[in-house]
Length: 282
Image (cartoon, rainbow, N blue to C red):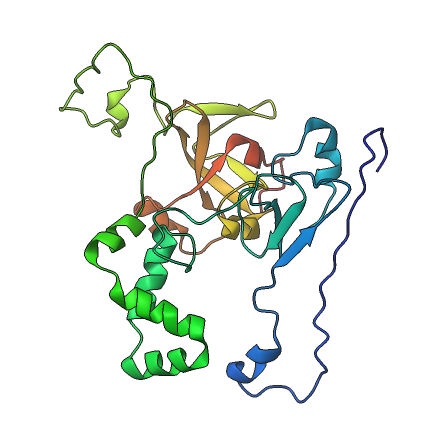
């Protein structure tokens, strides 16, 4: 790469070299030769990897020019170093690790663990017998899932961790119980249906059309499929740190009126959308 940083671009390509044969007649026949969830573990000596999710300023243009198809590379050295990178088909943070609430190796020890646990418990007895016979790890997983008690299931439902030990010397003010904190009337200065936010020099508010440009660091991979779609802003909201974001509905979806009636919106930060130019809203 240009510049004094002695940086190089690494290209890795994974190909399925399975010899082609007769087209499989059903899904089960295709799975043994399919790349269902390919993970790459890369290790380097005499150098270090650059974070793709939080690169230094000098490396950001080079990182932005990289293309990752079907994978998400993150730093993964167990010691917190930069000589190991994991490229997975799911979005992760740098140096990912299992949550301490996880009773074992399943997924991530939080809500998704709970969902997968319930799905596993929903298997029939015959299906569990068949799964146990396929692999010792599968058998151990089913045994562990069946042994979970209500307390262990509750830990997987999620947790809140607090950092630091600082505490205010003043007791917190008593909340106004007549007005819930989530009610717009709790703060008269906030009006999601009439507020606007400036994006690219243009005021954007309820009824504005925008083009979705999901950011690379979003935790929901499904949002990547919405890149380039046109959406209509339904509300301008603020998070707990007063950062604005938009509640939007897709402009070309036939059932959006039902979603709007139920308050089912998509949410994007202001730097993840761009106002529609005249004539580009269809």
